[in-house]
Length: 303
Image (cartoon, rainbow, N blue to C red):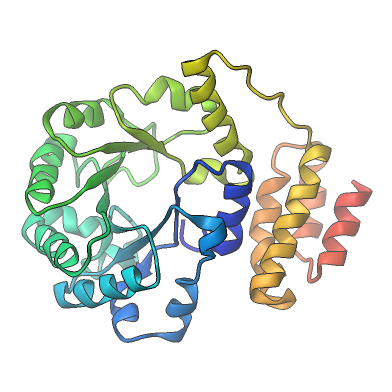
């Protein structure tokens, strides 16, 4: 979710579903350790609007995890999540992200260093394994022994990247044999997906399924409440009903980053928001060139 889950996006999600726990974009422990200006700015969050807020970090140097974790705790975050699942080539080639699946000793050392530094909870986001799920349970047991407080598992191996369907059965098997909370991730696109896939897990994590559809988080919360309490769920929104929130998202991005940067970064969101609607191709071609909020308002208003 790098380049997506910035403060503006998180705050939009929280407006729709206050119950949701939001995560930062994943941030380099090396950059935090050295106080890199861009990364420190990305750590910004609004305590009044974003709690519970988790900062996701990545890296490979235990001493940098220790110092970065202290910075995260001091800024008021509710927890730290260590990324051991990103399959991007440039991340893995640096022995970050998914590469740690092949080095459980170093992975455990990073957990211990982070836990030593802070009192807030520390979790790990990882994948089923490198080539197969056979290593999932021993890998996660090592992390639990190192002191991890929770695990989030994406239901694909590193080799699978994002192809095919996510496999949830290995996550259920993992939950049966470890004591910490396990959160499932992968192919949650609707509230029904969440209800069907949660099984014996402690929660679901939604990433790409929110692209262009942050309302799915509200739908999921409603679905779990309805499932437990027999409450009615909300009617599906039309695109016209979604436009006010889309423009709120634009305005919030501008407030936090200025109009030039804010609207530049909003282009990818605008392209996702119109996916599937009639005339999406033509509208998207215009929206990915907008430079001001007024331009976005005009295009969406005319549509």
